[in-house]
Image 1 (tube, rainbow over the protein chains, first blue to last red):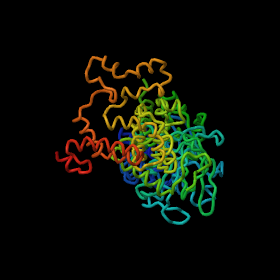
Image 2 (cartoon, chains in turn yellow, green; image 1 turned 30 degrees about the horizontal axis):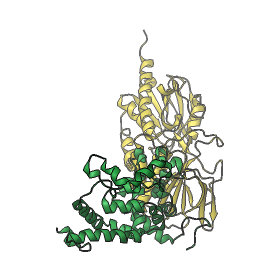
Image 3 (cartoon, rainbow over the protein chains, first blue to last red; image 1 turned 180 degrees about the horizontal axis):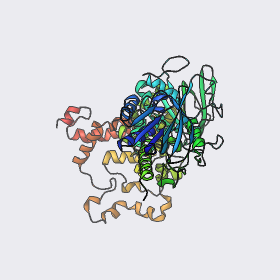
Image 4 (cartoon, rainbow over the protein chains, first blue to last red; image 1 turned 180 degrees about the vertical axis):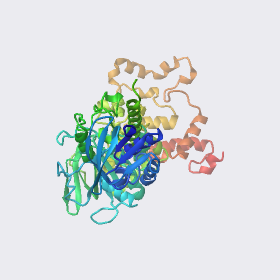
Amino acid sequence: MSEKRIMVIGGGPAGLEASRGIVELGYELVLVEHLEELGGSPISADYAALTPDMEDTGVAMARMVDAVVGNENADIRLSSSIASVEGSAPNFRVTVESGGESEVVEVGSIIVATGFKHFDPGRETQRYGYYEFDDVITLIDAERMLKGGGFVRPSTGEPPKTVCFIQCVGSRDRQIGNQWCSKVCCGVATKEAIEIKHLLPECRVIVFYIDMRVYGFWEDQLYWKAQEEHHVNFIRGIISEVTKRGDTVVVKGEDTTMGRPMEVPMDVVILSVGMEPSDGTLAMAEMLGLPLECHGWIETIDGALNTVQTPVDGVFVAGAAAGPADLEDSISMGGAAALKACSFVRRTSLPTI
Amino acid sequence: MLPLYRDAKYTDVPTGDKQDLFDAVKSDMRYSHELYGCYECGICVAACPSARFYDFSPRVFAQTMAREDIHTFYELLNDSVWDCSQCFSCTCCPRQNNPGGIITIMREVAVNTGLQSAKDALRAYSRIIYKVMSTGTQVSPDMLQPDFFPDWGPDVRDVSLNLDVWRRAIPPETLHTVEMAWDVSEKTKLELYMIWKLTGNLEMIESVDEGLFMILEEVMEELLDEHGYDIDDYDCIVGD
């Protein structure tokens, strides 16, 4: 029966949705998560509310987790990592390590849902002074503060009067080598801008952008709402550097639609950091022999028409392991990967005549 | 306050004064339907006839108001707010903004507060304002004077010499006029004067052109008096 068992690696939104699909279709699931808690980045990075509908992250992710945990077909391994993979489909022998002990698990198919990591704004360039100035933070730092129910200027603990977001930090940048749009940062920044204005209506909030990419329904649910109801300012022009004058950080850029240079003092600067393949994603690619596409993410076959199938037989990918993905992408890919993995193990386990 | 720079068109004022003018525009009941949010996409500039000829941009108006940039607002209020032809081509905006409508409100604020830019902009129109407000018609035959329209050639001179004769040659009797575009009845004029008075239009004129205001008041008072109305007695006008 082991060849009818499917392993999902990664317990974030994509992995959880894939897991749900597998157990609901009546197949055996082994879900491996390296952290001690399921939920992926939304939980581990303390997201306050989900984009765009602002549902409480804990509540939303608990719904996904509850759909899998407790199912009789679900074997969930938390705080566990993959040490090695041997064999090929439908007879993979995966060594799972947990608490110093290792066990070989036999599965017929594998879904890689190991996701992304947030770009480290101090990695390639110090132009924004992330590690230098307390008042320069990232989207994730801001989420963490918002999750705590407040928003303050880190250097003083006081509510800020001016806050700005700098978009595309670590994305769309040939110099850094990340030539992709991370898809979600425009929406997440806009969502956070609304949350900050909710808490601090008098605070001036500016988003400095290259293009605003709040596609689909995010347009009026987030972007219009931020502009029209909360008077968040969106200024086209990317910041060249953040410096410090006295106690205040100063952003320098061009207001491109007004055609003039600007230097604006800010109480808090939020860097909209993008996505990069997570360490787990790169490790799984190497272990499973999965080729990476030209940007360095796990490659799928057949372009837009097949978003989850890798060139390696019986191995599928879901969510941000295959490239920048928002929640909707990740959930859709999770479901699609579950379907493909289940049909793969069903096909390979049918008696041959 | 001194001019902002040597050849500035206006003098600077304290930030508080700019804020008051800005708030006056924003508190207008039409405002929330003239400006939603600005993409800064420039479709309004592309559609704008004035933008082709002047250093004028409807986008900058929408943008400045959305950003609540009161200093640029004050600059616009003193200068390019008068470059708009109020054709409303800019209402092609995908966000349904109306930069021309914002300009309408800004102009009214400029006029109501007697801003020098409003006085300068309207000075050239004092004859037209006088005609409209005193007769209800705009361009009248007697305004077609050869001195004002040299480019129209020698015929203007000939026509202007015997204007009343030419006008009488036009069949409808209501057009046998020289001082008005057409014959406006006294009743219509009375109603018009009451409207100017009651809507505050007359006060508006007082703040930008006192001389014109005095002439208009005199003309209006005379006709109102004749019919037993007192121009300063609202109840007498409204109650009738």
